[in-house]
Image 1 (spheres, rainbow, N blue to C red):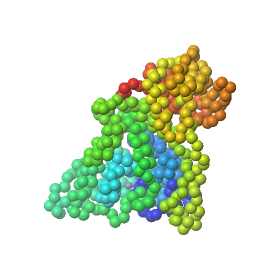
Image 2 (tube, helix red, strand yellow):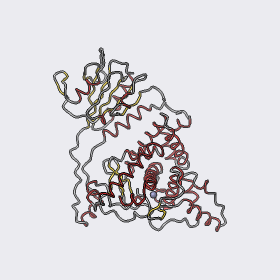
Image 3 (spheres, rainbow, N blue to C red):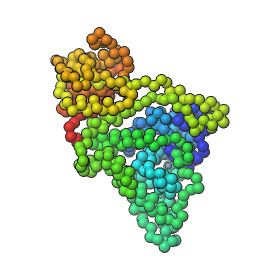
Image 4 (cartoon, helix red, strand yellow):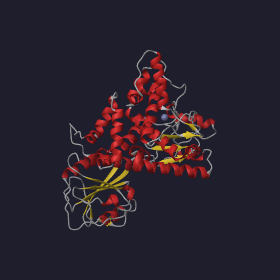
Length: 467
Ligand SMILES: [Zn+2]
């Protein structure tokens, strides 16, 4: 997905190949530094106020690469299930902070649209493409409080929704039809599309508006888009439920704009349990938010690392450019190691253990290690009875998992990819060597210190029922 009308040429390097991107015609270092600063400032503003969804989406783009291989900015799938954000440093510096925010917001909405409206007939219709540009830019103008499109070299860049509405009004009037006013025209994504379809000559540009829509231009497979966007929506929803008013308003608005006229979009919102924001209770079954949260966090920590990928489609192109169409080196694939440590000093509901056991059993390529702990660590097999003693020490778990202590004469000699701690949280806080890998599930009435600790760690309360 890439912003604006500049990005029309065929990419010169494999856009999913990080190293090739970094090598390709680097921009001057001062420009790169300034572009990075603008990007960071924009994402910070999103996170604090303007768009929880965009903030979460870019948090999922683990690599954010300044490169002149794209003309504007684009989010691409890297082939290992994660996304890269590519941005042209000169483009960002030319736009300034307000422009960068507009473009990044625009890109995030494209991904959300790709997720919600995946119907092939829609995606192939150039009028739908235009409708997406209109709708996305309308929302961006309102949400970011802008009077007009971002300027590049003094000229507005992108599709102006009011201008398109003007053309629509003239077209319909000329053909004896009744146009709807602007506010109605842009009310929902499908409404824009439906109204543009009423035109005798929808103002569809001869060429694609964004590179992402060119055939094979920017790699972004539906599976990756779905995974990344649904994770961003889930996290925004969790933030909204925990009192982030901005996230709540954004999601309510996004839902309202997208759930009409598309069965898929309505189903996605339903499955997400987003109705809770409107005070609707889940009709069929209780929504266990902590379970959804854990699945999402585990998914990101246990994802395959970089895999061996042959860039088939772009092989010929790379060869023509005198580069080896080599295998992108991705390292040996091994099972992911998951540690689940269960605090026996508190009362852990049995259904939590049962659910976790089933969940872990369903994840492919994972080697699970179950530990129980109080003041000391004891490995156990799910189903086996565990006995608690006195005192609790998280440090005992860290010491064992990090290979410093032995249990039953054996040392834990593998590095885990994720450590799940099931506990009430009541014991002296710890600072593990790799805090990013630790996930804390806190029982009801427990302490959520890992969330506010330094370094902060992923933390969620285990609840029963839909809270
Ligand atoms: Zn676009």
